[in-house]
Length: 413
Image 1 (cartoon, rainbow, N blue to C red):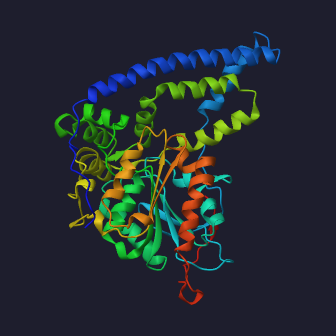
Image 2 (cartoon, rainbow, N blue to C red):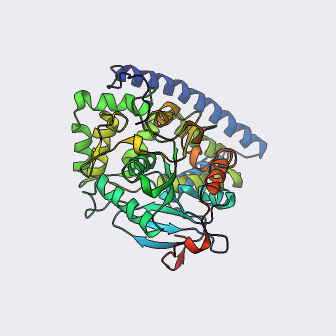
Image 3 (tube, rainbow, N blue to C red):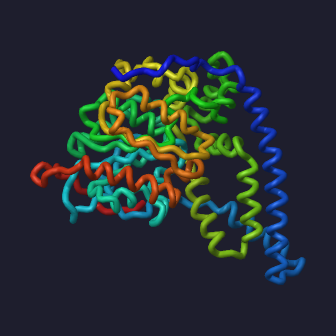
């Protein structure tokens, strides 16, 4: 059993409303700053290009068309779909021309967006960073949007899918869990430790009650006395699923001034092709949402967000208690220094509940916020590269022992 830190009071704090009010006050200040900066930048660029008053409505029309355009995001790296389940598909990015080794399975964030965030662009890709570090067998889950047929999918459904994927890849893998898939990866590793070669967890709320995240403040306001009525009503009103747009609204509601600033800067730079292209690239991913099974989402809110059962050792999945001390493999913990969605303390907590030796725990703090942790240039080059390089050392496999993967047509969609 891992050595446990002193017991803390991890029950829901009573400062939820105060935290929300503090966030609203910060948003007001941020909104004012965004308006001033955006207005200044627009007119400065307006004058610099010698525009006339008639150009103002034309700029607004161009901004409107750019901001509202919706497109499906794509994976940046060619890949094969090895197999599919009702809630996911398994994508293969392996390099068959290089020596075989234990495979690495990426579990992208599962928060109502497309999974291609882990392969966002050629120069912003966890997939390519892993391959360039020397991992020759790289795979990624691609979580699919919930449908009426999959609305009752549960935590057991997702753990089973991961287990079947690892079995398909040979029975053992390095598991990389981003954001909510970080706790999913940790649950899997605790239940099936013999199938995990190493575990990386990035920006994942393992201890939901550590620190004082903005999301938790809102949760305490919306679920007084553990009452899930608000969230149950949202799921029921949408046919048993949780719309991805609902989650986006929640993220933007945390820092509305950031969204205002992004839109004003787009207007100010509407004639800058580079700025517009960067905006469109991110917005294409951010705005294209997909639903989450209602049962799975409500389970997450109750057992992880509210009751914090994973870190307490009280979580039961498929009839088995999830004991994090069963995890003994090399552990990599990666956080964002300015992550308001998952503060570093929520991730660091995992170290104190596993049985991994201290000298096999690597902790990295990348600059920036939550999303930058998975696709930011500096996070990938300075922090993910050493993590993947260390995995390479622990993943060598004689050619004779390399399992043969299933074959499938190549695709990048």
